[in-house]
Length: 92
Image 1 (cartoon, rainbow, N blue to C red):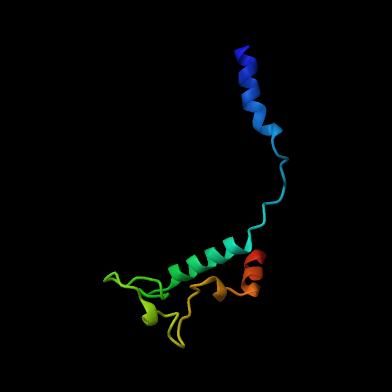
Image 2 (cartoon, rainbow, N blue to C red; image 1 turned 135 degrees about the vertical axis):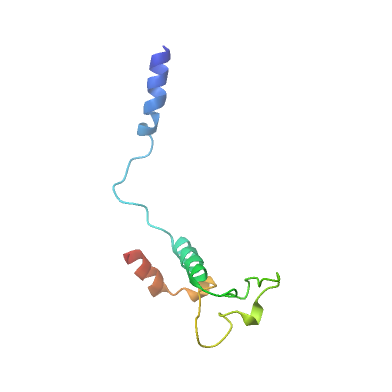
């Protein structure tokens, strides 16, 4: 009896949802969040975004690279990520 129960428990996951051969498509939000994280991580300085913190613990605000014209412009907000960037990321 124990052997039958053990066999049933071991094979139970196979009876679950059907397996698909293709990976699930990532949502736009997941891709956007990942692009923002990667952009901030790639920024060499301390203040990529207005909500980032300086070494003294204060927020960067207008001192951030995102707030300054010209130069590096990291992705800080979902609105910064354009639809074509999401489409290009899906192609990779």
